[in-house]
Length: 521
Image (cartoon, rainbow, N blue to C red; front, side):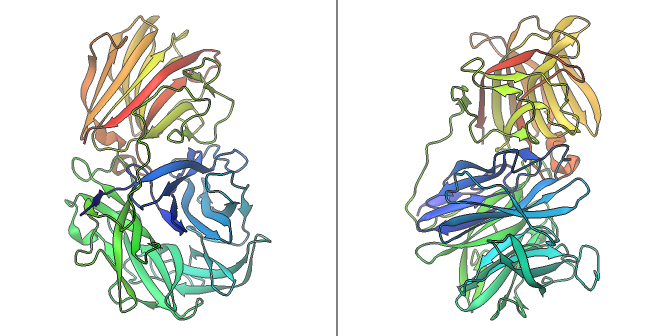
């Protein structure tokens, strides 16, 4: 029996939404304050995925200037109808105001259109449903029109939408308020028509330990909807905090071309206790139908790390190289910026074969667009390294390797000046306070950084070239600083390259010859 391993998208890939078009599957996830926004993936077998790019890859589509951590793009939904792909999502501003919009494309690899912003579309987690009679409906959540009966009490609502005009039309209709009042935070609705029933699948219980997936059905798209007596149909909140997969929720149902059903959902792996450095990841589990209700992972009812693979021809894509030598003229899709990149601070062409980062005044500790190019941490234990050439000209100038959860929780492994002497230093930023963990004189311009994480023990090494042995700068740093359980928020840990002139203007730059990443699990 062929099996697969969960998570199918490891690392910070939350709120999965997926569709099938013929024999092809497409999936998108949330991206929050990172740019480009909304990574889009393709698969033939539901298990092996390749990233096609991002839906929101132009500043005209996505302005994330000054967006605070964990705001930005929440919970996209991807849909397909009559040759057009639709991605609809919510942009959350710093005041937590919700702005819903959609974009379209004829090819999920892009280019996608500029946004169509929807007026009078309250709430988050917007979705589209194409009914068989030709009508199209918008669904989302909102504060109930009659008011909230308890904290975070939300209403799932539906309204017809005119996609050609980009407007909601007709009345807003409340269709469901969840399975249990104790669950709260009803969100993430997806509507399906299956076998004569309309189903609304939602998330409840918040995004933390009590997260869950529930379902209701109706003979009419506008209701009334009957909640399933077996709700929640998937959760891990009853398994305790020692279970290695936690905060399971936000699901999406997909039927294969052979009539089998599967569910995508988010969940987190814990690491060294209840710490979730990687954020919320995308998992896959089978679904059966009994009495016209879904049964998730029959006989078990929980997500598993290993399970029987879908009955689809296995289609593996070329594995991503461990090392990126920056030989292309564009960055690989794995790389992201913090917020919308401004000022042309990076280049792959000024010095072919290297990624050049211009020093910017912005700091990693600010809510800004620093000179940072990063990728997700995807394994509980990993090894990452980078080769940098840089000579700081002033005490303000610094560049190096960073491990990031957010502006107030990160490690900076950097080359800079201290009293005129060039030094390598490791700085931990925790809760807005910084601590120098280690520093060593380093007079050379070329340095190779290495970070090895074994669980929550992070160790930092350096050398001048491949011919040299690695030298430990600091071993056993506390990696929990990169967990959402200390840092808060909804994102996962990143790592990458960084250059800053720390509040001053500079014409200096750092050249990165390569960056490597590999899991150790």
